[in-house]
Amino acid sequence: QVQLVESGGGLVQPGGSLRLSCAASGITFSINIMGWYRQAPGNQREMVARITSGGSTNYRDSVKGRFTVSRDNAKNTVYLQMNSLKPEDTAVYYCYAYLNWRDDYWGQGTQVTVSS
Image (cartoon, rainbow, N blue to C red; front, side, top):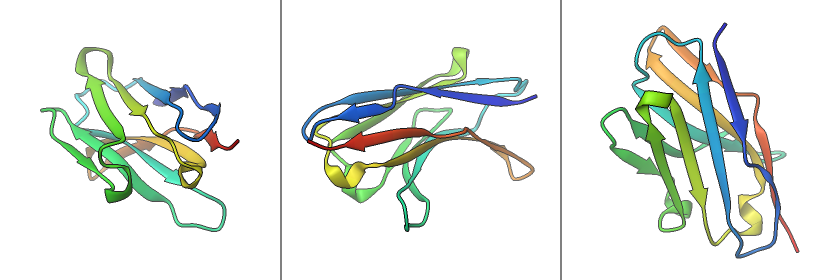
């Protein structure tokens, strides 16, 4: 059974920081892409940040310069360091792991709330 276990979500004030972690288990092969998506109520799920096994990254424009995605391939773990958080960052954040077009997986999601 493949599992993506997320941690690090919570309530933070505007301008604050959070670090999300996602550890993948039950995956034998290397994970091509890991990343983070988010979905706020009434909105579509949107890509936040992605990172390939080689370390190439891609960010949503609205988080560039504030968020940093990284990974530990040996641990099959992806991280999202979120700084200078804004209320519009409030959403459920989902971890994503892509092996190939036949195999991709999602975490259960972790709530991030940015509010004073």
